[in-house]
Image: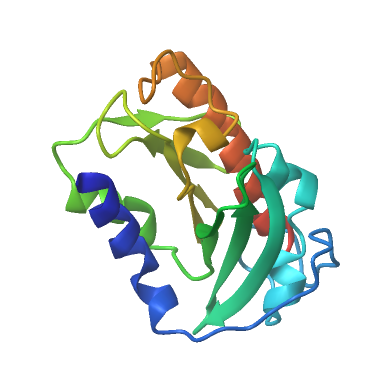
Length: 196
């Protein structure tokens, strides 16, 4: 399935990184400037801690039950564990901040890898952004945001019914509903840009 391929491509750096951990507060301090990736923060807890837990929880009907923050080279990954009403856990929802992306390589990566997909411009977050679904009109959107010299990717790896994304049938999401959910996802990127 194409969705799995997208998650695998973006998660590749994570698999090679190992694990770090943080407190479950989700609203920790930040360091450096708020210039969108040109700050000097080097601590994953400080950068990822800039995302308030309520901003993450706003994406889900599942409970955000934990987090893991990693520094991968110069980049940061903020992973969240979710627990649904049946007690099932999922820990692959993440926001990844690419600190040095002045050439926008990471920002444009998915457009290059999946040239046949439909990508929608998204205003209201970062300097520029887009969102997409692995299969247009189906499933949970993903969002990519660029600000200053940094890019951010947010992916939700959970069932659509465990999210706050509005859908008309089991997997059908209108463009308007996809955009509304993508804006909530983009908020995590704006939080991250403020934490660097």
